[in-house]
Structure formats: structure tokens, C-alpha cells
Image (spheres, helix red, strand yellow):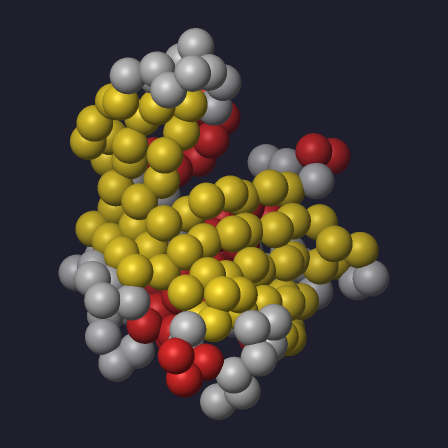
Length: 163
């Protein structure tokens, strides 16, 4: 396996198996083949080239239409989604779900042979209403609200168990 901190893997989105045929990590997620390809960037390589962070870019032909950034807890199997962004003119048609499913798939591959245990997301209570609806649709549960951390809004912690 290459050990460069910015290794790239390019896959065609059309070759994805359906979400229902994959591991329990994808339960509740609905993949929609709406993009041409993914570029997976392995960031922050640790000993032996093990990636601890990923950036997945979603492209439709030559245009980047979305990106997802996540970190991996290599010892405990926890995946934290830092950010998912989709071009505003292309939202609410399946691109976010496609990117979400691919992000979990890539994280699962990097954590192998260990299984990912849970996915964690932190969102602003007031400013992230659409993101909260998105993650609830994908099987996350609100577990805690942290007091305001300087942005005049509380931070909500959501978790999705994977095994």
C-alpha cells in the first residue's frame, strides 16, 4: 500500500454496489449513482502509511461537486465526520448521500481488519438545521448537547453505531 500522505484513489461511482448489499455500516444509507467518480485523498499518514484522515471529492465529469472530510480513530474504530459540502445548486438530489456512503466505505477499508464501531458528528444547534436533518435521515442519534463554545450556539453531538 502506498505511504504518501496524499495518495489518491479514483473510483467510478457507477460501480458502487447498492447500500443494501454492503456491511451494516451502510444500514439506513441510500446510495444514488449520480456522479461520475470519487477521488480519495489519504491525509495525515501515520506509521506505515496508515491514513488517519480522509478527504473524498465527488466529481461529475470534470467538475468537483462535493467533498467530505473525516478522521479515523485507528485504535477505537471511531469515524468522525468533520465536513460534508455539496455545490449549493446540486443539493437535495442524492449527492450528499452518495458521498456519505463512499466516505464510510473508504473509512471501513482503512480500518480493516478492525470493524468501524461508530460515526460521530458535531453540529451547531441553530445554524446547521439542514445538516441535522440529513444525518438523522442516515440513522444518527442525538446523544448530547454541549454548551456554547463561543459561537453563540450550542453544539449537538450525534452518533451512529455500526456494529
